[in-house]
Amino acid sequence: MTRMKFPKRYVIVLLTFICTNVCYIERVGFSIAYTVAADAIGVNQANKGMILSMFYYGYVLSQIPGGWAAQRIGGRRVLLLSFILWSLICGLIPLDPNRVTILVLSRLFVGVAQGFIFPAIHTVLAQWVPPQERSRSVSLTTSGMYLGAACGMLFFPSLVKNMGPQSVFFVEAMLGVVWSVIWLKFSSDPPRTDLPKVSMPKVASRDTIKAQAGGVVAPRTVKIPWRRIIFSLPVWAIVVNNFTFHYALYVLMNWLPTYFELGLQLSLQDMGSSKMLPYFNMFIFSNIGGVVADHLITRRILSVTKTRKLLNTIGFVVSAFALMALPLFSTPSGTVMCSALSLGFLALGRAGFAVNHMDVAPKFAGIVMGVSNTAGTLAGIVGVGLTGNILEGAKASNKDLTSSETWKTVFFVPAYLCIFSSVIFLAFSTGEKVFE
Image 1 (cartoon, rainbow, N blue to C red):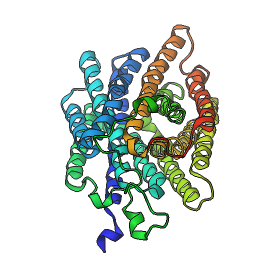
Image 2: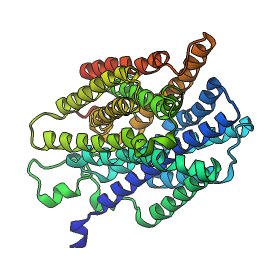
Image 3: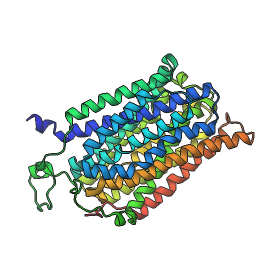
Image 4: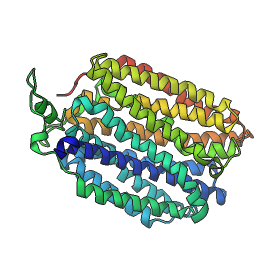
């Protein structure tokens, strides 16, 4: 009876939600702590952008290997090893902006370690989650990223102010170790009775439907169709939208604190709880998108394809307009409102492209996620570094970084990308299975 009330797959989804939460607490935490430490010694914007983007260089290197490793040795083991590695690095490395080489290497290796996490998560969810629960399960799991970012924005500025930037590293390392212990104790591979059958009868019993994992990863001996994946237009539709989503997210996540301090002359400590609103909005909208998508699909109001396209388009287009409006506001409340709308609707759009991995390739979800997230990580490298160079170039041209007009290019680039990506997804995506 207990198992019926709270099936094991719910435990897995809950733990992966906490996993993404902790990962983004780490990312936001480093951005806040390093910005304070770097500003204290006068590090310029281009060098700050270089250090902030170094994580993504490591992250991009391990996306596809992460999908491969999860396919071969299991997503559960890969998640555990990744968490232990990055937690150790955070706990042992000093945060000193003058020691550039150590910072570069540490952020590179943290990026490599965390790059295995999302392909592994998609492999685990593909094993455990049936088709009718995919949208809300993936949305809940990924919404942990935004709740983690919100928590980081809420608590870390005060922690840095009272205990110094290094304290952030210790808190992050502790959270990583705690999650690793919980994952080791409560996670497991799905029993064979929970794996999907090769085919389903036209009329399935209730118990049979519950036993279907809805697209478990392919057996480890099955050849991965790399060529078909690389040249698949539906996969490219996912890839393009993943790039755009992360370009907008990483630019705002890494540079919004600087915009508040330079463009609005307002420190994060003075903003109170309002600074977490954009990320908390992402948490809410991500789960709304998942519930709406599953409702439209299970009630047969729309097909899987139309559902994915609808939510993706609404999310990205509204986000684009909010990004373009952001620099028009000169008040903290207007800026927070626009960034909250932009990130919130971006998160809603994840019920389109981000779940689509398991629609088109349920047996190779981790692999496709690795390919897709490689593009998303490149967005971090390009977006975070490019923004630093844009601002440094503006400064060299004697433009005022305290003027919102100077920041228009920073926000307009992801806005245009959002519109372009939504058109690509409308044209080439599908909710049908492409890879058997």
